[in-house]
Length: 455
Image 1 (cartoon, rainbow, N blue to C red):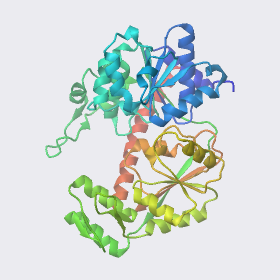
Image 2 (cartoon, rainbow, N blue to C red):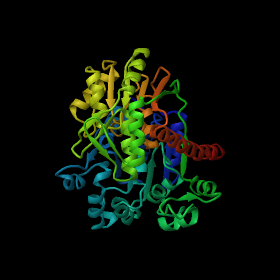
Image 3 (tube, rainbow, N blue to C red):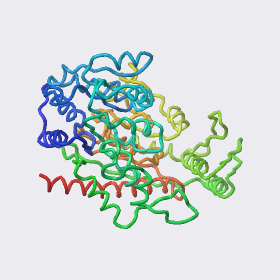
């Protein structure tokens, strides 16, 4: 198939070509991979680049990028190699145009590259697909890549969710593009300049100083391009279904909150700290609670299952279910034997067949964890209904999961149902995700304004 870029894709390509470091904060479905491949094609054919390293989540690196290359006539000549597995050193030393690696392989790669001069590397361009996965300066992979990032002449970042947890997410991402030129050479300096501790009893909690949002946005806007998806898809509607805990479960929920301990019908449940308590409360709101370290659980109510049944009978077509706990998937399969679970892991033949069957409309209910389907999957042809059995804390996973269906090629209006148990942690999580979304939208709208001025 011939790659004929939209005007916005041509604009994005030129934006990247004009800069040694750049970030494309484009909505899901706008073709970030195709845009990047077009850029790499131009760099490779002109001799401006000798090769590119693409860092991506495992499934995306192994499946999505090779498929995208084979999809378009202009890119099929590019030879790719996936640096993974027992013979990854040999693969790194092989001749290719694009070298693919997942984020978990970066520590090994950084060690290998640090032992030789950049002039001996097989690539001089790096592409961070899902740039947010390198955002944490405290991780070893960030520290190791920080030592060698200067060896790349051109650095490109791709993501639709750059500030899912707030503006503090930007530091690590920008550093891997500009080596600290805009937001500071160290994370400590960045925090000291733009953040403060709101109180003494929460020493690890940081908030932005007044005017910091504006200052940060102004510093990074020259290398960050934001575009929203306005192509074809009919948009989405979020429908919250408010539920009430049964009285017997409500008393147990309150007991757990107050004492970090509760006796169920058959088992004891204990939360050893605040984080564990939050997880146990989410589980109880869901309908079942783990009571040991072996993954054993006890059901406490079926309110969400009954609410889901009403949704399933009302909608026309297949349903995509997002779950947070394994026991939710087990309970769902018990209620819906014809449902299919899409698990995480490598892009296996079975997984590919599941995706094919879903997009053909042959799977009535697809059950998956957001982390398993949050990136790199096109599910818009199989259905237009999503149900969040339990909402995830992560805005990135929440947004990315919804956009697996709400994207270019979707012919129906997407309906996103959220099962929320009133007066429980469910409401806290939903509010937290919405607050993060507002912060991110503010940042991205500013970038759009800058882009319009630039054009």
